[in-house]
Length: 326
Image 1: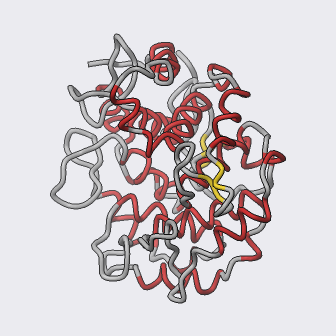
Image 2: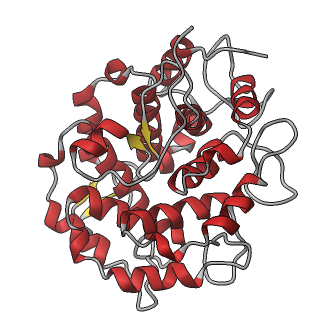
């Protein structure tokens, strides 16, 4: 079990992900490529190694995924535009200060076209709806400086209808509460300055109860712990200013125990195969917990706090104090 964060190993692991283009797994994950690049870049930013990946190469890939017919970004060249991959593309370009490469009015039009009469957003032209897509739309419009064009009241109305008796939020109306859906709904409400829709005390307790005896967090009752919930749960708690409601030392130990100390990367739980998804969200959780040497992460946008502050978008979240490097 690792007791410290293996930063150099994790940086090397992330750099290696784009080098194995002959690996079958690389091609089977094409539908996640844009998201994966954002996850990797964000992880590097948290570890203060943003320049470990070539900036121009990343921007070139992002722009190669532009769907000119739709006005948004796909996950891979020649893939249809989707609001999730569009958000990841915008996040990457904002981090690299390259939004000038984008036809912003067309992206805004694409995102707004996905909102349904109920207020929820479709992910793409095929019709799937999910509160995740509502967050993607709200976050992307905010980063683009066009949040004022959104029908905010209609958006909030749908999120309100997804709130459950336990204080949490579901994927759609009537769905059970889930930590990842809590994040997207709470963060969307934070961006829209509508946090009064939340029952702070009830939701805070539901989130705190996600911690298991081994220190890890689960996404809903009676499920196993998973490193990714270190972000989904902590992000919401930080927005609610209730991070002290969980045992931070035990959670830190759990995340560190899921590392591969030899080849880098973080898994969903100790002993499993690492991946970039759990790597970034494990690091994001550690940042919010004040782990020494990491950069500050904005839990509302899941991006470097300095980038969000520079755009004047910071909301009233709180992380635990950054501990000094021993």
